[in-house]
Length: 76
Image (cartoon, rainbow, N blue to C red; front, side, top):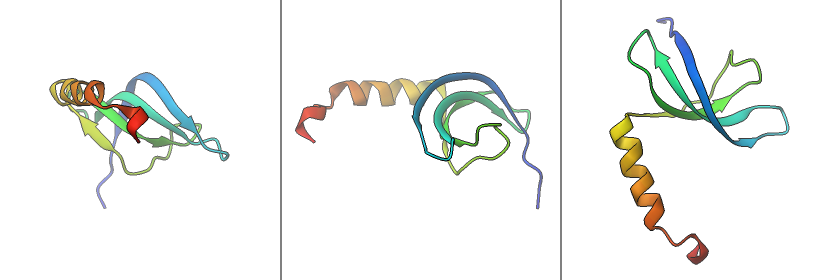
C-alpha cells in the first residue's frame, strides 16, 4: 500500500468535536507534496489519523459557499 503524506498548512475551523476527541475540521492541506487544497474531514486529536473526507479547490469552495448562502436552513 502506498504511503500518503500530508501537511496541514492551516486549521481553518472546527465544525464539531466528538466525545472521543476527534474533530471535524476544515483545513488547508497539502497531500503528497501537491498544492494545498481545502479539506473537510475528521481528525484525531494528534492529527495522526483521519477519516475519509473531501478536498476542494478554491473555486469549488467558492461555488459551495454561493450554494450555501442561497439555502433557507429554517426550511429543514
